[in-house]
Length: 112
Image 1: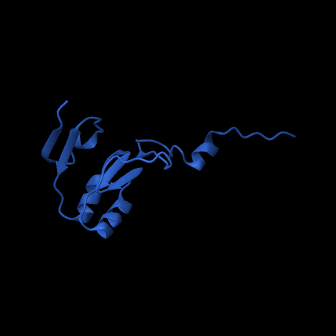
Image 2: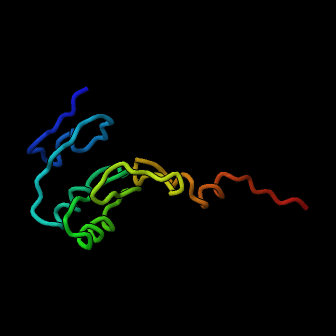
């Protein structure tokens, strides 16, 4: 399957609002950092996102504002088997590999 790039998309388009698991990139113009964060967070999903910048400090500040389970800076899809994994909103509840998730699935009983 050939990669596809959609230029000049707007955030209200279906392709911008739904998770597409394929080699597709949607390009949406933004005015400034605040507008970029608003657009990125305007979704019912929040599994992963990425920030690309030549300024590491700026990229980190933007990454901290995104409501996604994983945020990559100047790369994409590098995962660690030691880091919790999961999303926000309709992309998941909790984080796999996180201690609190393990506690949530353990049965608790009191015997007297």
